[in-house]
Structures are given as C-alpha cells and as structure tokens.
Amino acid sequence: MPRRRKPKDASALSLPRLFLYHRALEDAVREGTSVVTSGGLATRVGRGVSSAQIRKDLSYLGTFGRRGQGYDVVMLVRMLSRVLGLDRDWRIAIVGFGYLGHALATFLEYREEKFHIAAIFDVAKELVGTRWHGVRISQVDDLEKVLPVLDCGIGVIAVPAPEAQAVAQRLVKAGLGAILNFAPATLRLPARVAVRSIDLASELSILTHHLSRPGT
Image 1: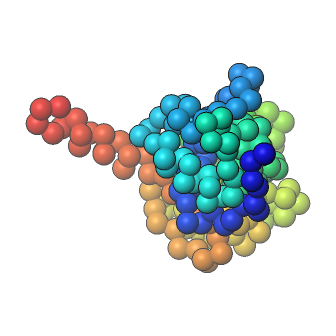
Image 2: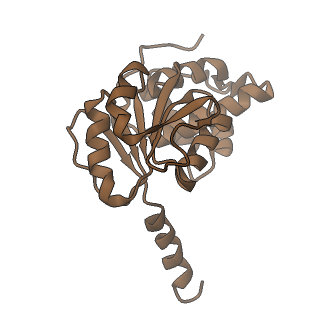
C-alpha cells in the first residue's frame, strides 16, 4: 500500500503546476484510468514538466506511488483538490460586464464546475436590471448592498484601469478575500487579500516580441 501523510503547506510549490496535475488527472478519471505513472502524468501535462519534477512535488505533499506501478488517480485528484481548494464550490462576483467580463462568465459557466457566477455589476443602463443565466446584473453603486448576502469569495475586475483600485477596495470592504484583476493597473490591497493580475496586452506583447526577432 502507498504511504500517506497529511499534505503539507503547498506554499513552497508551484501552484500553477499543481493545477496542471489536477486538470490532467481529472481528464484521466473521465477516461476511466485508475493508475498513472509519473512519466504518464508528465506526458499528459506536457509544458516541459518532467517525471522527476512530478515525483518531487507529490512526495512533498506526502503522497507516494508504488515503485513501478504508479499513483492512484482518484486519490491524487482528491488530495490535489484539497490543496488547491477545489474540493468545494466558489461563488464569484464580476465587476464590469463588457466583452471581457461576459466572456469570462461564459467560460466559467461552461468549463469550470467549481466556480459559479453569483453577482454581476456594471454601469451600463442597458445592462443593469437584466439577467444573465439567472443572475441579475446590478448597478456598481449597489455593490456594498448586494454582495454581503451572496457569500462570494472571489471578485473579478474587468473595468477600465482608472477604476480598478477603487473597485478592488470596495470588493475587499464587502468581504471578498481574493481578486482576479484584468485591468492593466497595479492594485494596492491588504496583504491578507490574494491578488492575481492578468494584463492581456502585456502577454500579447511578449508574443509580438518573439515574432519580431530576426529569424522568426
């Protein structure tokens, strides 16, 4: 039998890498695969992640496979779900429901079953008061009144850069502990708040730099 220990704090690990393992293993479960080796998982994950890296990460979390036999797929999915906080559902509030906000909501609704859109805010008169998949789109001015009763844990900011800081502060004041920011602005929030910022234009500029190099 594989030895099991209580998973340690994953702060010293690459959380994006753990998520890649989790996603690949979920695909394996759907395919009916019950056991996977570190090499097999490395093939599924791709992106240059080696089997040695996978063994190191999983051993750090306290899970050991049988040498020559591999890992129990269902057990690994459950363990990684606990570490990543994916063993429960999360309610999300989106501020800014233009093209980007709408696209994000649609993606989460159809692709990520653990994340649920519970609140949507915008300033556009043609949107406020309407519904998206049963969720009422509220006026941003009503944020502090609407959010406290919805038990949201994550806020998504998809507003113009000049408005992002004020929106983020209001979300935190309303009780949210994590922010996913798509505005091209640096947010200054208390250390207790988890913030991830994604600047799409910046990411694209990395690709254009690559394409602009001689010989590419």
